[in-house]
Length: 474
Ligand code: FAD
Ligand code: NAD
Image (cartoon, rainbow, N blue to C red; front, side, top):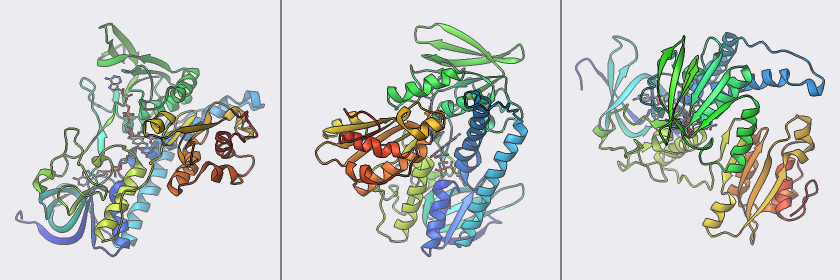
């Protein structure tokens, strides 16, 4: 113990107050554990402060502005003037409401909150350096710990974030003025969501992507729809180019890229957003002092009870590896607390959904047909195009489809790919079907409200059985 430290003890120490950490803490409190949660920056972590929530607030406003300005075919003539400070102020209000909620819910569940940076001293003790100068530190002895320190954006060499010309996603979501031109490095989740939003607000957007398509991991039929729409919005894609560096030129950033054959290109833009992935933040709390060693990717490896090789220390969320999604962190946080409290809890879900909030949105859960085949199934695929959905037409959004994959023999639902308005919501029905071991007939026979987008899910299930009404059966 350092001289001047105060010393306390806790049954469960949670390091990091993002979706993984605060869920572990609240669930631990509910189960009667004496819990201490230490957060270095802001309750709610990346997700609430600079990730999921701010980006979706931003995307919503851009959708509104774009829709209203493009509604002439529906007989609506309007102009949307974007006030970035108003937009960012509203977004910050949404964030505050949610982060305050995390703090209040934690306290209401008996969680002891400490603001500061926690570091392991050994595998039973942590030291917390309190935020702010002269705030001191304390030593905490714990029986169990949950590491939930999250992730940070990968910094591309030559593109160090300066919050001015070279922006991280967090910087881009807090700009005071709309950039006239924006160059986005990386056409993944963040690149596609934010380039779409900035293009809708009126920025001139170029996306430089090292691969030959956007959204690695998604089927070409899906990415094509999103890419085509993005191009309609004016986004210029430069595929097969790696961003190399930048310099100031004519009051802009002049970005240099290079193709595989060595051809060099240059692009000028007022701002550059770099979104080339995120890396686990496993170096913020001296895990080696607790006998833990992250793998070569910086991930703290865990088993299906979220335990690390040091049995009484768990890791959850982004620091525990892919997929780096908030709902995966939530689930792991819950399981960690339940296992520590002695409950028979495991990470035993069949499928973790994913959604991309582009235009149209993408929702994905479980297996696609190729993956199902590779796993030994004989897949049957049912599809409902959105242009056959009455509700999609009333929204003026007819691009996309709902595709359901099932096992031909048993008709058990194996997965779905949805490209549609609100695909992020629609995918939940198929996730539930997979978790419940439902068959195609269960979805097809469920009466869905009319007119809704969810009817397309039922029609896709019926289509797989040759009994769809609103689309031709194969
Ligand atoms: P984090 O949310 O990163 O929280 C970790 C916390 O630990 C931080 O608050 C940090 O300050 C704290 N911390 C770190 N070290 C210490 C220490 N030593 N002591 C004390 N505290 C410490 N996911 C989705 O599912 N859907 C989305 O739509 C989505 N959109 C996103 C948009 C953007 C722009 C970004 C960047 C991410 C998005 N994500 C989305 C991913 C999501 O934000 C993460 O998966 C999620 O936040 C992970 O939660 P976590 O608890 O593991 O870590
Ligand atoms: P990403 O991994 O999704 O995409 C990074 C992209 O950058 C890839 O397409 C990659 O090929 C490209 N790239 C890498 N190096 C490059 C270079 N030198 N030049 C040009 N392109 C290059 O990463 P991200 O977009 O930064 O997002 C990080 C993570 O955050 C995601 O993987 C996801 O886990 C999470 N996230 C989720 C959501 C959501 O759930 N809707 C939204 C945003 C972020």
